Length: 211
Image 1 (cartoon, one colour):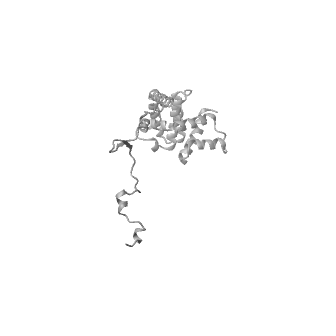
Image 2: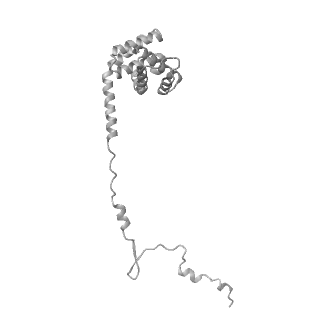
Image 3: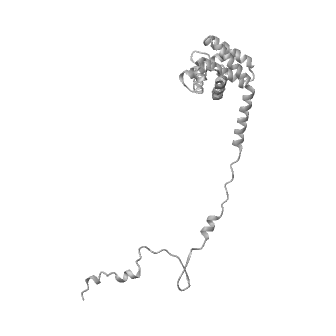
């Protein structure tokens, strides 16, 4: 099947997902499993939809950077999805020359969009072609940095300093008694009264003894 037809089928799928606010890949899976009255989706249409879904954030950001007057979210639904398809082909499909990607996008716009859209689409895609090499180099560098970061081994756990062990092994503090001998310091038992208090406390028997 001709790629022009595949682009049209891909555009239909992207347009439907955009209008419904549905995840692109989930809708694509539905259309593959149940094409309805239409013929099964061409392989190239599936490749386009998956490619746009994978790179949509990057594609939309690039379109926003180089669009004059209209951001992606404010464009007509047909226009922004035509642009997404062509931008994906320009950046990520080396089999399609940039000029062919632009011409095919303009052809779709002439058929499905407003009359004034063609010049806007042509100018924006030409700008994308102008920054293609720089953009791809930047993306490759970001990917290299990400892979390098993921491949770095985790650092070994630091060795114990031994300070805690030294503190644990320290002998208990000793208190020097008046006779010169050393005795271990033991906290007073809060439940034990001093001897002087015991000498003044009456026993139960004393309370019942008469003189």
